[in-house]
Length: 221
Image (cartoon, rainbow, N blue to C red; front, side):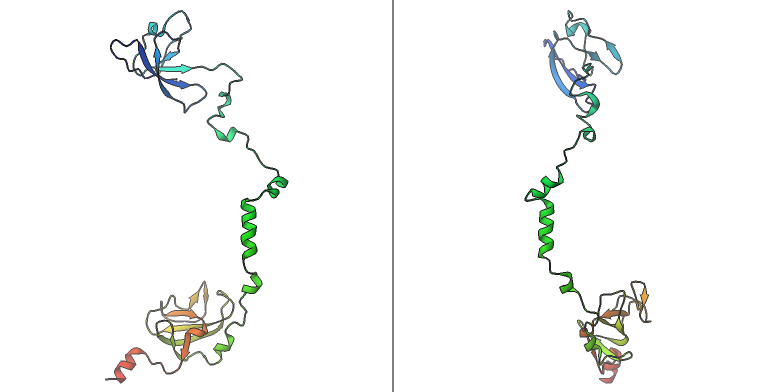
């Protein structure tokens, strides 16, 4: 262990930083009486304190000296480095049958949450979802899309394999109010200018006499 000495005039003790050969992260400042037997080191070895008849003061320790403890006990709890490296410590694993009997485990919580979810079959959207609403929507129809009363032209009606089941309507907006150019998730459903295309559910679409906004303003002049 390393000792950093802080000597005070008239004080017959010294503060040493103590380190340990088997515990690399251990370090402590300890005040020792100069009568104790210690191993005194600097960065290079100064001396072995092997003479038990000599006090620590005989070796003239100074501030910053390092006292290193050599642990020669093969049965020492510090041997092998396991006090610092937890990967060397054998981990306890509970037997599967005992874990299954316990309450309050993450597995029991997960099973409970899954049992409370509605059946996947109950939530499944039919392939014919909103097909009836497409009866009066044809490609080429002028339309208005909610929310926002966005106007445009119907460019696609039908199922979209890259989207959820059911029927979809592809819209080419008059203005750049869309998200794409007719390609959705790598599949082209129609052609339009960038950011003018959108795929919406039929219940958002109203077809009829919906001229472009500029044309409407000219008619009102």
